[in-house]
Length: 243
Ligand code: VGL
Ligand code: ZN
Image (cartoon, rainbow, N blue to C red; front, side, top):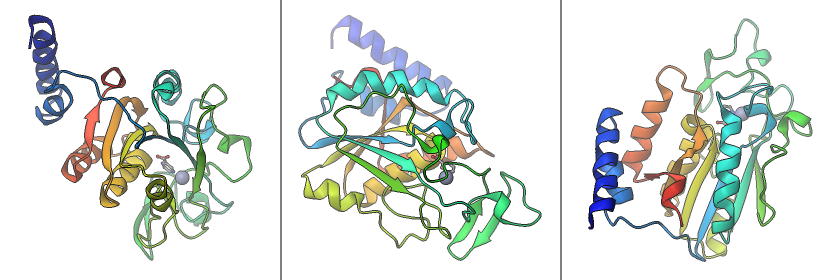
């Protein structure tokens, strides 16, 4: 290690200690002091960068639109790109409005377990559910939609909340020889986190690109999500770590 990269490495350690995130992540991203180069067997997954999740949408994530330029910048480094869309029916089971006396961000118990109740969002075929107009992914090969079963939510792009119904994404990626996925988009603590953990479960190497994501952070959900992703073996990196 020469002086300059070493300083960068130590700064990263200090920043991560200050943020209380521990050194595990920093070490994983910086130990070799070299960038991660996505090869032919890697895919970028762009999760739910839709009008509903940015300013002016029905379930806006704070600064959600800020992921767009970051994703546009890294997209050309990938030979394989998959985008996802949250794609709910009207009257979906994840909508607070589907229940008497429930307000958004409260929870209820459904057949498959606890469900956070959201404002109506990303209804199939509406402008709210369209991908953000500034997102530039001309080479993306697949758009996968999820959450289309009226009674079942799906934060994950791989497996619905009943933990039984597959979207088909794992099969698609495997059939195409993909071994490693890089996850970006909205929201860090819900659809990104579930997608990243399910990608590990399906046997992929997983990088989560922190600055290409923004979070909802509901009752500590962001810290819990990073902890769960770390435990699952997802590696946390920044967009600048990709070449
Ligand atoms: C999401 C809440 C509800 C997400 C989707 O994309 O993170 N969050 N539906
Ligand atoms: Zn949703």
